[in-house]
Amino acid sequence: MSHSADLDRKVLAAVERLGRALRAARQDVATRHEVSLLGLSVIETLADGRPRRVGDLAAELDVSQPTVSDAVTVLDKRGLIRRDRDPADLRSTLVALTDDGDHLAADTATELAPLLAAGSGTD
Image (cartoon, rainbow, N blue to C red; front, top):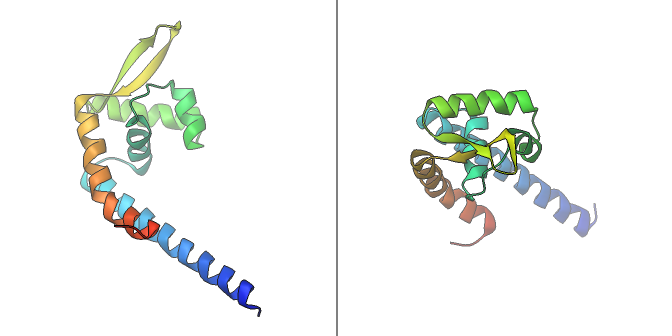
């Protein structure tokens, strides 16, 4: 095996290990905060402050619109997101985080930061 191929194999193995560790950490965070992994993904996505339509969230998260709609309904019942009319199209709604959702997003980002920093090679 060439040096380049060996290095490629080691990098791929490291990325796979990091991916498994990140998935496990995200599952742990989601479980502790009593949200699904998809719910956590919705919260993380909305943490940038840009409200989105459910269809846009579905496309961004690469899942079906009904699946995201179900997750949004659960998060709405928990008071973590809110739905507002889209001023550009009053037939549509936009989804955004509530203050509680913002706090949860900040908490989860803080909890996951050490793993992400370890993966990037920085402190």
